[in-house]
Length: 229
Length: 269
Image (tube, rainbow over all chains, first blue to last red; front, side, top):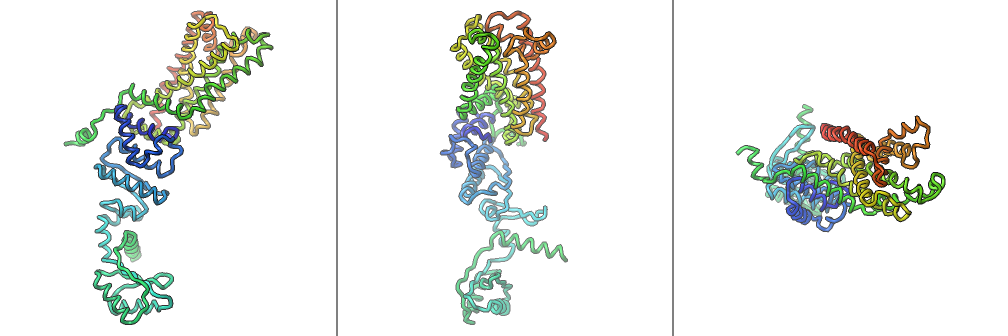
């Protein structure tokens, strides 16, 4: 982007260079500024824009050529949460208008939010490809999280879950939160039932879908073991 | 349907022609000026007036005895002295484009690429025109009375604009080759100021020793100033005319193709 031009001037310039007539260029610039939430900033020079605004303007200029495929390399790195949301919106709009987007990111939540298909890359190789749902189900079911009251013998709780239900339960550093992967909700119910029967002091518990971070750690841990053996 | 057809149906637009693209880049330069009105005012109005006042009042007593006598000789030179350093800005803009990455976006787009150079170099003529008019107006107020009248003033202004256009290719080249915008102005000023002052802008070369006179008269700035002076006072000989136009032409045929070549070659980096 040309920093000494305004957002509007940049877009009309690039539109013109893409073969839009002057009238079309004005119309499309106004439309893009509006839909990328830059309408208010359109008359300010780009030099005064924040990082998020610049990237949205970059995206807006990028779609002037109506590309079929667009590569976005870590487009939200270093943006604040609000700017990130707004950029996500912009990317979704691109996709809705028929552009295929190949996006790289370090934020797995971002991949989960935006992608139809995700590929994990570790040490330069693709280690898994699939839809977010496929990848999550690949590590088997849901995560049961149990928060215990202070002073509870956490090791005992884990032993109990392993012996009664065959669960591979782990606790966190503080020793108050126990996590275990469970294949189905019924198993989680039974496990909680067992703990209640043994009058374990449970503060709180929850059953959640795994997030992509869990998938990534599972995949890389597996590969680590593979490499070691 | 093959790929070409697919993209044709998706994108029915034709890339702009050479003239349309050049016009777009001219408009870009106009926007730059509009967005930086204060800078333009300093450069094209304030600083030329200051220069004119300094040289008129500082040198007139020593060189010619009176302000009204000296300014007849000085003003044509001040026109060139004001406009030529302004052409350095073309180079700075180009260097900025490359440093800030706009260049790469331009390079990926399907338009006649030299338009980016021509557009800015041509539109910068407006800044030069503003400065020319300022100097002429201030000169008239100080007692400048050209013998060539309005016709002479118009012809001289046109010539200075063309000369500036020719010179700006030199700095455009420096702008493309340099790594940082600061280097462009530094390097360019080092070339410009010795040439400007080792010339006939301020003093008549007939007062100098013969060897020095021939050296100073061969300076392209001297040649341009001689023609400007001749046009303003309608004393230009055909030799002045040929030399004045020839030196500009020479600058363009050497530096314009070279600049365009280097600009287009940069893509591989």
